[in-house]
Length: 448
Image (cartoon, rainbow, N blue to C red; front, side, top):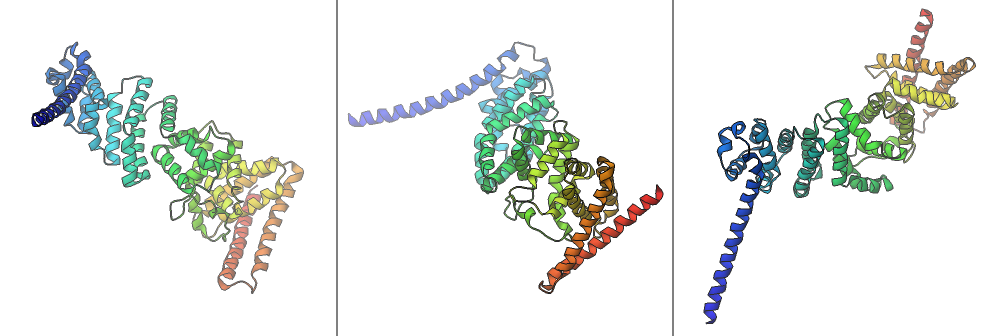
């Protein structure tokens, strides 16, 4: 009797598993039937022979298609577009799509599929689609971070996001931005980083990788770049704006962490290779200044002042290199701010260092930068009352003389040979720059 009961229980368990399998298959088929029920009420002429197939057969065929084939199918007709969109968001469709996502190009193809299959929908429905896709990819993101690293995962999601929102108006892009911020929990992660900058270096690197790969690096033009950068920075207080901008665009060390002290270290003005470090930072400032109307001239000046004084004061050589990269318009605003507030001495010192990097003998573009440096000086003088113009000119030349005298006096026997050579080169460069500047000013005076 006991053996009979055991056999009966085993048979019952086998039947239960079979019933569960059949029930699961039946649920998938029913889901496909429900999705296609509305389309079956209308003629199938726009779907061709494909519309004559049962809905479960249509889904079965689409399971064997690639992302590009599904995208092509979705643009054949409105009915097929709706069918592909429902399939791509269904449980059956997602099981078929997930194994295809292995590289950034695959995520880009998924973005194209979602954009094409929702092309005629309202903005609200598109955002709902984006949210569903991002939620379904949550586990994929975690597994990719474990296998290939978070930066690779962010790059993949950046391809998907930017293709999907390409061509949207800015009001809809801002909603998509808020959606990503909410799902990725960016606000809380930023608050942790900004509570103690230069402390959570790995978290800074993660925030940098996320925001750059999803928003900034995929921008196709300066307008898009400025829009995403504005969305990131504008809700923050001024101090945090400068810190976040620095985290996003500042140079990194060999470990990939943001370097907070590199700009504070002094080097001679002969090391022009340092200017490369500020290329992306200066580009970001120029985009905010020239492209986005949300930023005033005072905002840009305040961000630069905050950035170059935190966590320690930057060396004036590096401040000058940053201003050189920002171009004459931002330089005029920086000098104008000093002059209007009566800080003539500070303006003269800044002008000296800017002259050294703009009129450098080693710089092949020095003839161009010399012209706009003169233009900056003329703008500064135009802001001064008549009685202070000659005063500013005298202070500027005295500042130049003082720095050259200091370089000459520091070239003592106490320094090693390498340091003495650096001081000699900087002294020589200062003399050369002064000669070039004097020649240009004399020509201008003679012409007038």
